[in-house]
Image (cartoon, rainbow, N blue to C red; front, side, top):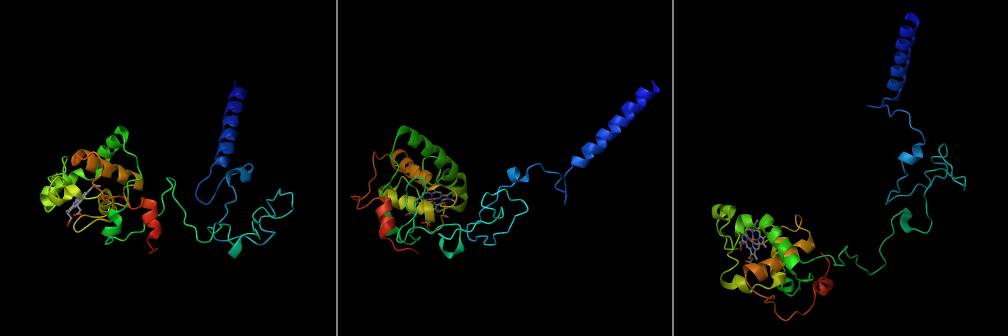
Length: 230
Ligand code: HEC
């Protein structure tokens, strides 16, 4: 009996010390099996590691070079990142070009056409977004009577006067860059969602089947294209 107890006691002490040995924390990373599987060698976009022996202690490379060596002579400027092809402009996931109009450039903005096709689903999303981002000031019906609107005052009544005839591009621009006492929402609301809000404002709040925009001269990408950078 005594022997059995001693064995159990000794065994658990041994197990505890083994487990304690696995503990990682602070400066101690613990023991890692096959560290390459946990830590992939990150390629820094703006630099290359040109020293062929870097990481040779870890290397299993067939070319005999160090694990961290990642210099590519075909990339210019000793960078891993490639530069865009000359005279090209990167588009985002939706295929839009960057929106480069400045806050005061309302006139060219008014020519921008809504690239998002309207549908019941889009209007529903537009409604949700409007309630989230605009309702507080402009109110549910767009009359400038939201809770915050009542306090700050001077909020545009989107259903009245000249506001009813605002082109879609103008509304998009105001959401993106702000105007007067209204702050810019470009950094909070993704581009596509802003265009959905525009559909909602135009069609539901202002009750217009389609935009009262002037004959569209160009779509949003073309306008962005003719607008010089910065
Ligand atoms: C913090 C309050 C506030 C929020 C939030 C807000 N607005 Fe405004 N909005 C204003 C005020 C104030 C004005 C009047 C701006 C001025 O002319 O000084 C205005 C003006 C406007 C105008 C008229 C622009 C013009 O040409 O005069 C439009 C269109 C508009 N807002 C749409 C929106 C939409 C769409 C949203 C939601 C994405 C929104 N606003 C969110 C306060 C707000």
